[in-house]
Image (cartoon, rainbow, N blue to C red):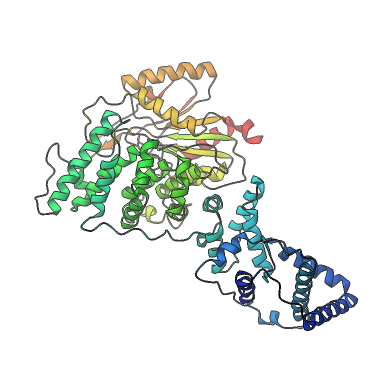
Length: 593
């Protein structure tokens, strides 16, 4: 905002509603202005017409956001043009004098006719590029959805603004616009203010203790037996840890926590992971999300997130909780105001697939402007993760096998470990998730989803005394999540990684074959021909050829082991190219529409 503009605003702010007395000097100035303007009209009517139209554009600027900005405790200084020659010259001076003259005429006429400008309009003296900024802010709050989307897109594609202009947008835009900017690929991170300061910890307290108190405050209702068991276990072990920190001996007792060894020598890290795992399960229940928010959980989780920037597993569970809370629209406002949108906007641009995908899920759940689907825990969109004008014609779903995961199962074959270090520098050399990197580029009209589910009950590796979940239970649970994500509304292709033979899987396979033949599904199967090493001593042929032969579709033997049957060596490898060919041929009619 220029200094002149700030002065005009301040005059309107402190001025009275009573117009100043009209002296003889006052009317003489009006007469001189009219004469000056008249001479310009005679000298060049075309120039005047252009300038009046330009002026009209600035005069009809809705400045409700300006009014709010005036109440701030600071102002933004307007830097001069980079080219100082722009400030000189007859044309420049004439233009400025003309604008001033016309504004005075219009203001005087308004007073004479007792029809002052409406409060929502202002005569702020701003440059053209600043006018565009304010007009975009106004447009982003339009009643028409199309106009709002266009405004957000134009903002995200703007890269020539000054730093203070991005900050103005960050402070003046509404939550809907902020979320849209976070989901726009080209958005500058200066659109997002840092999260507000976090409240201080209670005296004689620690993050670990407050996390335990948050978990203890959550209801124990509506939970299955295993979640109740793990919640009790987390509370029990955290109590022992806290007692040890206050002078007692630290030990695990009871069933013990053998998994703790993987977290190093600091007991608090283990206890935090236990509590976070339990809170993840609680956050799948809407009423428990309300309790997390009311207990200051959003701020506490943000403190943990910042503290454990170098611990992906902790950050993963925190982002899972926020993503689950984002399924509840009445919590949108508190999630935005607590600063989580700024955090997710930065995480979405991360080169780490886990981090960016969890952020994409959270922001998609918050974006009710363009996303109708709900992405529950374990359902991750690999493409498109940003807003896009590309029509989506079909879905491709990736389902990992036992002991697999939504991201690591689908990485490029990493026999040359050194390439992993280069992954962040060049995804063409090595990709940590080929469906996101390769398939998304080759088939941009696809929505690519990767699914994660519990193949052991949780990462704790502890045995729940309750009955283990059956394949049928897991299938129904997964089906419900996929339907919420809109799977089934478009043509789809399933890509899965099997884990060998078993009576339960054999029954499932028979059911699938009957259904596939009835519906004339197209099927392509790959089978490994090399054994898989389990440790250094045992080698096992996990899926032999006879087990992989479904009796339907094409079966292709590949000279790899079971772990690498879903990990192409490179983009030109047969595994990927044949998979890509199958997708394109199967969905040819849908992709051509």
